Image 1: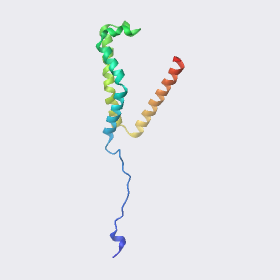
Image 2: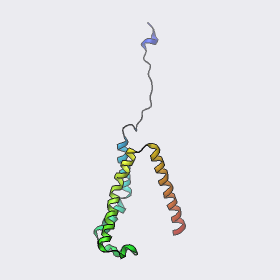
Image 3: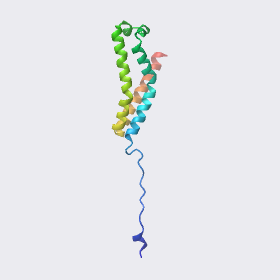
Image 4: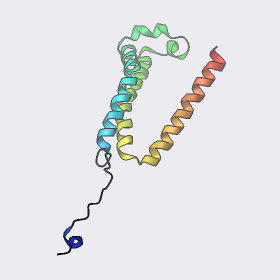
Length: 122
């Protein structure tokens, strides 16, 4: 009996841990974004529900009508609430190459803002 014919050849394959998990990665990204925007979201909601806080702002927001002021902060609140869902959906549906490009653009934007802030503020 031939030993070559009766032996099974075992092939090792790398396991792809990201296969079918894009929804979980999207949920994780949305949760992280929600944690990062929790304080601005809370502040925007507070400004929207307390129209007397309009006096805290100088310039255009202090000159606006009370209804316009509240409408502005409600829009900001709605956009901040939608942001984690949009980020999660984007992470779940975009390709890896697209996510790398978007991440690089955001990183460059944050670096530019930090540099400009250091130059003009301090």
